[in-house]
Image (cartoon, rainbow over all chains, first blue to last red; front, side):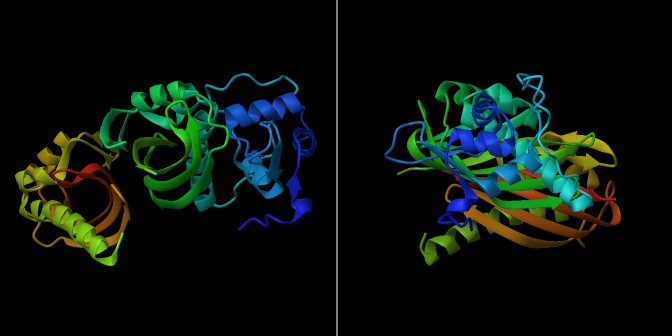
Length: 213
Length: 128
């Protein structure tokens, strides 16, 4: 578990986060919105009081990729440090989590196009939302995300990643969902099934359970 | 979920999986069709070819015919309220299409519907 009470392991402002990543504040704010940079907000305080855990920032840096749909980088933004996985398990594991991070980035930004590259073109979704079954094309997810708008506080956690050669299942728990459709402080459990297709992992199915409060 | 509720859900899921297993053994897709959601999907590579769609699966089961010696094992069952994930390992697949002694790993995702737990996706890896 993160050592939440250890001050030196946190970054307590946009300025400190920007300094830690050696980028401008503008850039790290955009990374939060579009790429899932894990920035937290203090509750009961004004909107822009933020903090970040160094270990989360480090983990994000290692996994960060440019989603193909994401083309708004400053020219002086070199790619963040990327640790080369020298182990075949890690290579597959990291390739899978990168796809799920595309989903997270899209969810955080309220932009379905950011997550589209993570999905197989014929991917489907299923699950219940407020008692109604939603089963159909993944396009429904993209539309829902666009209509929901930004959900900057979502806190995703990987509960399970299981890889069997060419297929994989990822259980993602997402707390603190917010937005026009999600409401506030909602929790979703997602189960993604992935297929390695022409050397690339793609989400083929998103199964979800929306926890009613 | 109380313990009793958990067992009830687990057993219902196991029953759905048993329909898949029985149909595979007998080579009769009609036995497994009720286990699948009408909009279920199916994904995986079979002999280097991407196979998709439950129609492919049902046709394959019928054409493969009886596979009485398959050895299925439920590796994991994870239930999250209205959704579930089951990993199934099947050893000693045989039949017209399967050949003999083949191993298949399956990931099933299930949705709890008013008519019971239904398979909404089967992803498989065929161990060549």
